[in-house]
Amino acid sequence: MSAEWRALHQADAEGPNDDGGPSGQASYGRVNPRGVDTTHGAILYLDGITVSFDGFKALSDLTLDIGVGELRCIIGPNGAGKTTMMDVITGKTRPTAGSAFFGQNIDLTTLNEAQIAHAGIGRKFQRPTVFEQHTVLENLELAMKTDKRVRPTLFSRLTSEQADRIAQTLALIRLTDEAYRVAGLLSHGQKQWLEIGMLLMQEPQLLLLDEPVAGMTDAETERTGELLHELRGHHSLMVVEHDMDFVSRIADGGKVTVLHEGAVLAEGTMAQVQADARVIEVYLGR
Ligand code: ADP
Ligand code: MG
Image 1 (tube, helix red, strand yellow):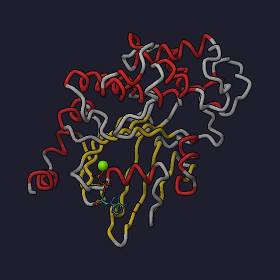
Image 2 (image 1 turned 90 degrees about the vertical axis):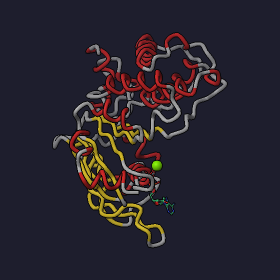
Image 3 (image 1 turned 45 degrees about the vertical axis):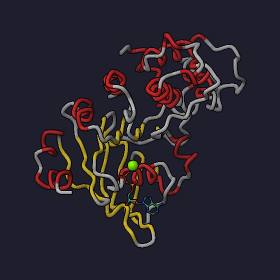
Image 4 (image 1 turned 60 degrees about the vertical axis):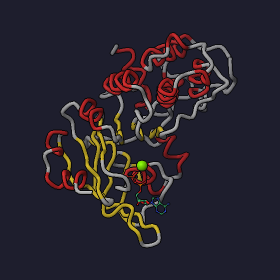
């Protein structure tokens, strides 16, 4: 990955910059009014999170943290609380107890969904939601233009830096050859990549992906793995996935967290958690 690409993806570190800034390239980076403080090395801290639905605990004293630039895989049987955890991080669900911090300083439990997205947490849901009637290129342009610092006119002239950034994103999501194609005509996997690209245009510091390869062909799954490898280090990623082969591949020796009954059952490399008797029991004992 080029130094330029890295610079673009770190452009928001300096904070608000309405006039484009001295570098001239920060004008389309995400404004992060409060700035995420990650000096202690973590981008996300969940501490003692409990979520009760009419007395049933979907999350039960869940404690977890994610390092800056880490790609963390989250696995666990159906009903383990994976989606509820993402709902808490993105402000869709309020915890009954516990704390959730973005960096050391941003208390997620005090922000609404829009504020959390604006602070730099992007979420990809299972079903792709792209603008089907627009081309791939227009979709990326529209995603970029939800940034208030970019004039909200569709089809207005892009600066060369904006065009470069879109070109880089197209290459990353493997859609350069489909740039002028209407999104509705893309395959399921390509739509998923486009949605990841749209999220990236928003410069999230933390990206949450819920089952990114569900419904993909083997070839698409393979390419998604490569894509996630390329994002690693530039963004912090939390990937919830059922496909164990895929998890092994993308975890690549990194940490995997196993959720069960709303709490962390095991954490370690894929090899470690797969050898853990409690994990084997949860997966095979039912
Ligand atoms: P996962 O994503 O790991 O499959 P979920 O987070 O979707 O698990 O769900 C965890 C548990 O909480 C499940 O038993 C589910 O039925 C329950 N649950 C999730 N959302 C609600 C809700 N809004 N009301 C009641 N129960 C819920
Ligand atoms: Mg789920």
